[in-house]
Length: 162
Ligand code: GDP
Ligand code: MG
Image (cartoon, rainbow, N blue to C red; front, side, top):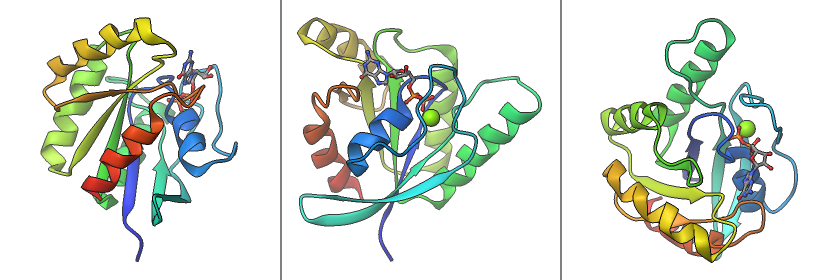
């Protein structure tokens, strides 16, 4: 079976946009409204001659009821089923309490994690990305999922963990 990468993070950080980059087509549902990807959606991807599966998930919000709680549960299932996790943070916002909560979940799961500092569309965003060292997950990889900046280096790192 192919190794599985779960893409996780809070709503609206750009997970589905990044998944589209990784799979090389516009298929994962991208929306300006947070929390649009309700369930886990699995795609096949290939990088540097290696094939793997990518699971796009809905985001987390803490202390919410109803549908968003079930989205969070789906994301937790995705982590459990994954060989490695790609944790996406919005570098233009910085680390939020929700991001910190996701870090705890990831630590508990004990899976290898690669940290994507998304929405670094230009050179000036690099400093924002560097602040995410504070999450304690190692090197933040600055990427622009929208434009493709940095995604090659990110995927090279992902392959090391899969
Ligand atoms: P998700 O909820 O985490 O899956 O986030 P989406 O992929 O649906 O993206 C949420 C919003 O962020 C959309 O408006 C995207 O176009 C935007 N977005 C995603 N990646 C980037 C990026 O690298 N740069 C910028 N400027 N916007 C982005
Ligand atoms: Mg999404």
